[in-house]
Length: 404
Ligand code: CS2
Ligand code: MG
Image (cartoon, rainbow, N blue to C red; front, side, top):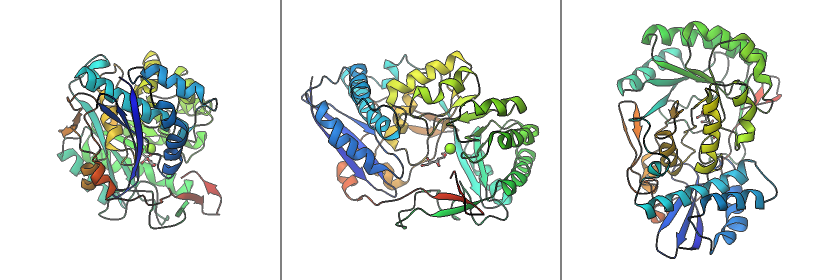
């Protein structure tokens, strides 16, 4: 079998997605997610201009060789654009391999290690009262874990809380420039413990309560937050600090037993190697589309399994159903699975990406179709042209740029 063509499809059913489709001389094709929120066209161009021409004529069965060819052959390594492009190729090749074998990809990864993939949902509201109603909705759906985010008194808006009644989509296609938001660490740190106290009091001790700090604290501030939440036993706090300084997590670990999850912005094993090997985190959040595909993500999870670190893959709606389908093939099979983020996509997105994964009672089940169990409806995709959309820029109340 040989690769005969590959195309990059950019579509925007409610939000932008980039998908690579690799076709072969035996009619079997595979698809891979290449979406990088706010920088979609960078990856589309990297694929179209610098990767697709190199794929034509290659044997699609040589997944590892292709990965090394694209990674080492680029000379300029790592980074979200390069690794998302490699991820898309890798994912599509695993899709092809599964289809040729007549098996879902998880059967090629060692088969099932669990009966279902435990997921967490996003409960958010401007107020804590509103949040309690949202958590109740997720519990009624059978969720075993829920991420909780509210507004911060004194701030006009904050991360993770959508406008009433809409699903949270931070990339804004209505504005030519990134929206700007204001932030106050002091107002935030004064508020979060009361949110956890009320949710824990309402829902008891066993519901998994997660919270996304979204890179906004210093290590000592994160230590203070972790300590203040210990009475409410969070399942994890996520991205407490900017993670370029991996050693900075030692400071957090010295002060608190609150579990830490990091990694959605990481794109290689080297980004999280120290965090894993020094057991500075408890969950690694790397995902298929941004961390080099199934081939590289397996390596990250295997390293993590040596150090009691479990997976907690990113699964926001800016990762397409193609990524989620691939993630579930890994989630169901790796030994150190922890939790999978699950934000259901819109109906228009699901129509562009028909898939076989299913949700019931707090678990996702991967498709048992050969390959990844997801497709790209190119006709439907053509209905939704690309719309530039940036993620917000965050500033402190004095105007200083701060992590969003
Ligand atoms: C968030 C993401 O889901 C999460 O944990 O951190 O929603 C993140 O804000 C977006 O993926 C950014 O595109
Ligand atoms: Mg996050």
